[in-house]
Length: 255
Image 1 (tube, rainbow, N blue to C red):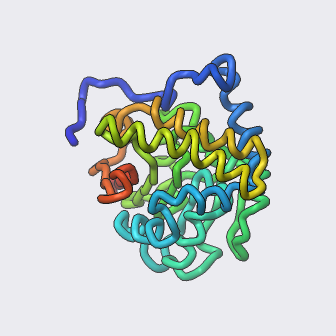
Image 2: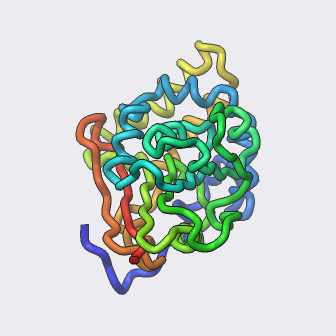
C-alpha cells in the first residue's frame, strides 16, 4: 500500500454518527458512557463475536510486530485487558506492561495482576517522552477523537527504535462480505447478547461497532497519518480468513 505524500493527516476516524450523538463535540462523552455501562458484558460478547480475534490471534499479531521478552509496553485503550494479557505472556513480567484507557468501568473488569492501569486518552498519554519499547492498541482506533494527535503521542512516548502495533477490524472489500458482516454485527450479535443476559446497552454497543467500521477512514489514510506523525515503515498486515477483516498496522519510531 503506497503512501500519499501530499495527503493531509487524518483527524476524526469517521464522520459524526448522528444516530448516536448529535455532534462531534458530543462523541467523546457518548463513547465514554457506552463503554462504562457495557464493561461487565464486554468479554462475554467479545467471545460471542469472535471473528477469529481470540487470544491466539492477538498473541501472534504482537509477535509479528516485534514484541519480545523484556520490552516495556504501553497498551492504549486497554479496556478489559484482552491485548495486555497477551503482552504479559510475551514480555515475561506484568510490571513491564502499562494499560491506559479513558473508561474506569472497562479497566475495573481487567483482571491483570501486576499490570499498572492508568486513566488517560490516546491524545494525551500520561507518561514522559521515550518511556516505552512497544505500543499496542486493540480495536480502539475508531473511538479516538483525533488520529493525528494520537499518533503524535504514540511517537512521543516510544523510545527511538520503538515499535507499534494497532489491531483493527476493517470493512471487507466485497459487497457480499460487507452485507454478511453487517447483518451479523448489527443483527445477530445484539440478539444473542440479549439471549445470554447482557444489557440493552451492550447490544447497542455492537451495532455501534459496525457503524464505526463502516464509516472509518480507509487504511491508506491511517498509514499516511502514521507516516506524518514521524513513523517509518508504516504498513498494514491483513490476516487471511474471517472475511479478511482483521488488520494490524505496524510501524517503527526511527532510531
